[in-house]
Length: 445
Ligand SMILES: [Zn+2]
Image (tube, rainbow, N blue to C red):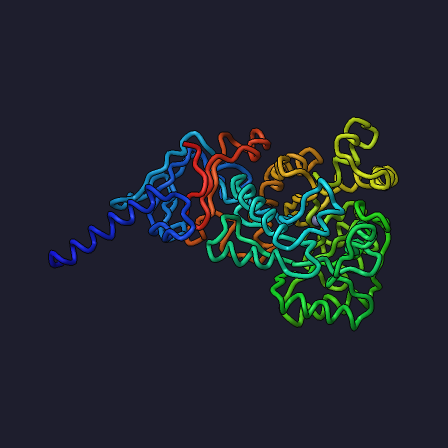
């Protein structure tokens, strides 16, 4: 190398140091150079095993896990991160979030401008990443004129916004008057354009094709009523078998998987018979229906912190005052509380593939969605099954071969927590170190 080349390299290096040193967070600064990192972990869980594997070192190069073992090579210039007091696991995956939603004022949220919703999304994505969620599936934005969550997903992919990898179903395809019809909530306030309402086979096909053409990677649809929607009941089944068959087959022809919002047995069964990949909530499912899911290999995303807690605390007036839900919501929970609690316990009586989903966005931002791990365990799921629900099983549901497991060749989505989740599952709520794609985004030091 001649002297001019060396000089140019030194100037470039100095400029790089100056930029990263003085302008941290500068949105136009070049991304940091690809680095080599060695994580020295006091304890590792790989996303699969029935117990933690003990101390281990992980070599990360070019965003991927290059080596794992009791010791790994330390290439010149590598950064060594001491996680000797931590348990290191795959980055968490939340399969059911709504990053543009907030519970404080449901009616007003439906009517917010898309840019306002995008700002809420940017805030939520940062919070989720800091909690150790390196991938999320967003299952419905209330932007019924546009595709805000698709834009957010692309912004994260381009590095414009810090957040987990996103997989998006833009809207909840719904019947008129069903769970995704905003009009009962906002009719008195603002007229809302709704691109998600579809009644009858022809409209369903058109809406599914539009959703996919605009960037939806999943189709979510309302196979039953809900608790929050004022005009229906969770046991109601708004779509006929023929309509659900048309929806799922239209999506399948486009290579897109489907997942229904479904509480009651009949809506779940119709969806399973039509060939959905997963079921959201499933909170009123009988044991027979859970076994049908198991037999067909359909995943269940039980969103227990958003549902089971309400049933368990049905007689707790202070709780209901604090959550400030309208009277019709508590009345519906009272009607279905026994079935909800029984169904939650029945997950441990069958082998249905459980993937973690919290329904983030339906509860306040300050409430940690990682409490879903402890909720699953409190309702009878074993700790390994709960942890796999938020890592390897979630990755399988989302068909993401690259994540959810710590193994050589996988993407380096790696987090660390100050304790062993097999001893205390709530340590999943205290993630102190986050690496996404080989880039450290949170560090406790
Ligand atoms: Zn939801």
